[in-house]
Image 1: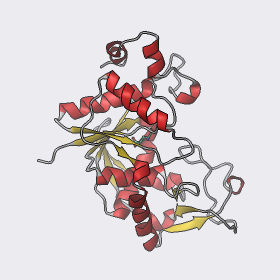
Image 2: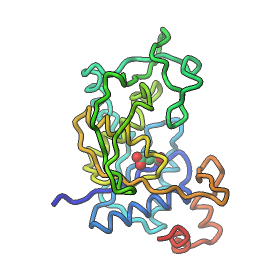
Image 3: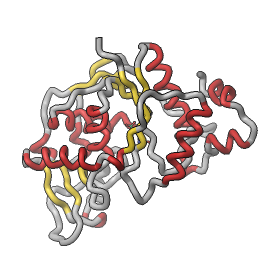
Length: 261
Ligand code: GLU
């Protein structure tokens, strides 16, 4: 039997808060239940937003919280070649096109699930740095599904809502979607556990796996931790970081129990 492999994959663009703690503990519990390995991956491709001190802080606070990881920590910023190779493969298949469009040239009315403006299907002429977009009409494949453990059922993948999604950003040469799919395959991840806010992203991920000939893990999108007003907790809301809660005197056991672990 293949050993199950799970991962927790934070982006070091701010301190970890309760939402991260829940996700990290959720993955750890799922891995433990089936005797799986639990990997830590630092998703630091966005050089402008990620900071080195957030990486060290994340590793330290997860350890304090009692989340244990196996193997070495993979840092996406050290594997740009892997992403370039996958992008080259999609390019060779004729599925990507360069796009110089500025934000104002994109649709104001039609947004993707992340709230980003959709591409209008034709590009403005331009020079200089460009993004690479997936030609969704050409790339789309019927009959793709993934298994959602939270619903205990097979979900039909439909990436069309993402339009001609960006596969390589102008500024960093790759994207979250592309990197995550490549890494999950290279790390042998069999189970992806992550927040429900990434459920729609899985539809693109499933398509990319199919195009790149990569295996599809099982998915478990867990509910998000919400604040008293029912909003999703986010760093941008100024919610307290785990480090701040610790400074206020909360113990790791108290945080775990507040989150149901
Ligand atoms: N790095 C992503 C985040 O922090 C999560 C990626 C994933 O679990 O697929 O939101």
